[in-house]
Image (cartoon, rainbow, N blue to C red; front, side):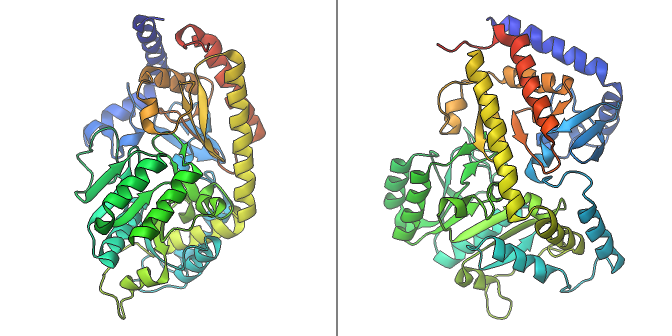
Length: 434
């Protein structure tokens, strides 16, 4: 089908969206007076303007115009508990009743640290930050000082926070470290380049499944090659599990049987509050021991009582290892249903991912790295996004889909049905298989 047909379909979707959301449009225009593009977080913007979300409860959202949506983005994986878990709310209120900013070690941080170390056995000691971005920056800093080297191996399509993104071309906001960018899921290239640059490499930073690039699982041989290579050349292997730690009872790396030297965490572990953490081998983390170590690590809100309380309540009362495993199984079953539907309908659409995280891609062949998605027409992603909104489903404009604990079987059925109606409506625009 011609480009004109896709443009016309997208124009109709934009008009319907604009006509249906006058309150969100007004809010956007008012906020644009004070923030560039009415925005303070780039991923939340989409044309012609983003919805303003007014309320959340369980796994449901309501926008400023009163439309209700089943939430299938869940704050980009941070919202695993939904929007109104009483266990989280009560823990935060109890913590606040004893004072908010205590200017010292408090009664709550130690128990959360212990809970995380027991949950993820590769983490012998850790330190808290306020985001996954900070956690990755501090982990890399630790690796640079521990090894006395400067080069950091990363992978195309990798995203490790707002200042650590590695797309098709360099991002102007990426910190100016000495990066060696390699192809994801290519064990042979990784071995060759690690050996070639071995004496220079401080760290190998990788997601066991790339999240922002489209839920692309790391192949076991590839991840094992990184572990073996880091050991061989004396570098530190850093697993970014900000997203993937939720994909199995004790994290994805633990499920795969590969132990990193350092691990970074964030998102849901803070119970819905600002959170990050980095940790791992005791000898590396000793760099930050203020009694003996050379590295200072500051952050006014690193141990804030709201995050410490919410994180502990979430991990011990709601997202236990058993709950993490069950949610992963539900996600695997949903993705299997979606892929079976796409195969049956014979269209170029598939859902990649693991457990409770997945991404829609308008391709037929296996997706091993972000380069495999270069030819995808981004307008199809937009059409899918606006169609889902019209069916009462809130997902990501890039096709990222996230399950949270309160998502019901009926919500999943609604999502699958919405994909079916999308295929029916736009079949002429979707490339046929075979």
